[in-house]
Length: 82
Image 1 (cartoon, rainbow, N blue to C red):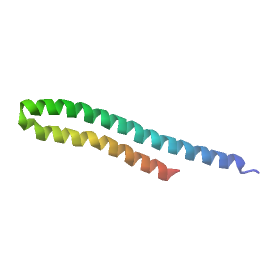
Image 2: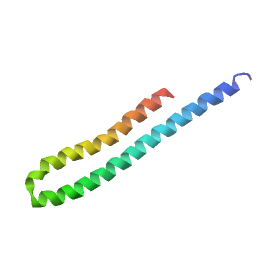
Image 3: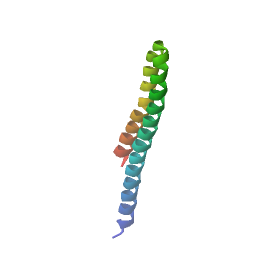
Image 4: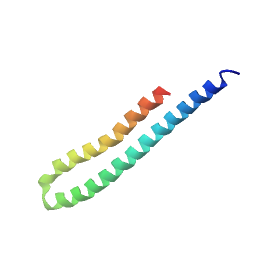
């Protein structure tokens, strides 16, 4: 009975770690999707007028997708801490 308070704290910590992991994946995925949408729209319009912009657009899209991967990495680290 003396350890019930300690067990409750451990369960709380684990719950908040999982909440943080979910938020990091969700929000980084949202930001990456928004960035990809903006860059994709502007990039396609720019590439239609000047085809040499295609490589730059692809590079910027790669950097935008990395945001989602960083969120996934943070979530994996958080879930292993709990």
